[in-house]
Image (cartoon, rainbow, N blue to C red; front, side, top):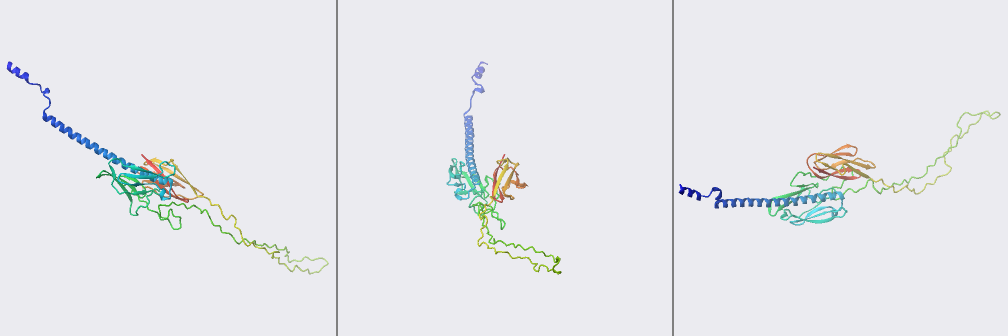
Length: 356
């Protein structure tokens, strides 16, 4: 019994034996694999964040440049806002950054590791927010950004002909062609997106038509003659009185008027009445949430009718009464949009913003 007892005392409890070498190796291998996967996941997430941030920043600058051109209404191509891809990692933004009416440029560098996958390109927005010098067959322009050399990891910034800016989406493929106006009416821009309709109504220098026939018309004064054929007998005279033998009044004027050889028209340079259109919105500025709406009212001096011509597909425009229109959002699309109206004084644009 004593020998058996001594043998049992030499054995250690199971809880004090520790880990074997195999268990340590397996634990280290599992920890290494988990750490490697976590590191790869974090690295991939950082790449996606940098790529998404650079693409969103480019899209926002493109939208700001478009809105700046609509706000300032430039007709000179050198004063229109836009963006230009300079090289693989840098692009230039041209617009009025501080709102003083002067166009400035700013060079923006992409985040580390992000490059442009497309060739350098320059995009310019006209006074209506449309792209200038775009091929007639192009519906949109796509600018691709990618992470390094990985062509499978790209973000696409699309800018349509009508100026809509989207990111990884083909929602706004709403090409707005140039509208040919009816013959005899004043065209909006003659088929060009460079020049606005600056023709005033009416013409500021009307040509008066002088009336050369300013000769006074003589008005003869007839002699008052008694045409009563019944004679009045005079007592003690001739029993058959003779009436006045000349009953015809004298129709010839006593003097021949001398017409003036050169007539001077009255007020040869009349002052034209200026054509003025005042736009008011409710709310002001015109900002509302999706699936909501607002109103746009036009006041035309001296008078005239305003007609809606073009706008984004996600906006409906309905005439309420006179020159007042109801605008409404029909889907979940958000952003800044431009509506065009034809007025007696030319085309007027109204910018609205749809929020959450």
